[in-house]
Image (cartoon, rainbow, N blue to C red; front, side, top):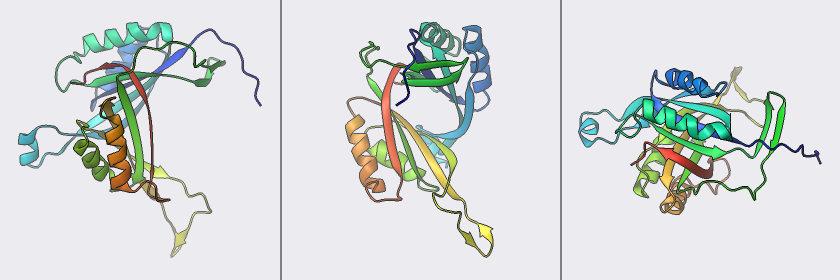
Length: 221
């Protein structure tokens, strides 16, 4: 067993979802608060407007920014970002955080979070569902029917556990859809049950789902 290295500093991961082209600006502002860097992924968010859906506009391009920061910088950073980008207004973006339980590779630090450490009360839960490519919309529909207000979809690539299979000498690539849903804690059990049932996640190979508490939520109504 690896010996735990005591570290009195604790960390959070900050998730920010904004329209395409804005994540780099958010990261620039976060750096002003002492955050050293982040990772940006591209995806698409579901459109909530009935009028837009009527004319065939179902999604808008999104970027999600992941940033790890020392806990003493978390609140100043999220308040600065939320205020500057006006997350209190509709369709400006969402932000939430989650505590990091194990951190390696950041300035040579190693962190093991003690479960006894206090955290803000989490009244939201973040779900990540990974399913075969093309089935992401089914996850979004299932979550919405159970009370989720929307979702963000990313494309990924799965890796074969066995030697990559070939057909006529061409390597097969098993694409994946990754769906993030941020929901209130009161509907989280129903959302989980709906996704599991709709996607039959209890059947091997159909995909998997994981979730964690979301704290310091901004931009969700």
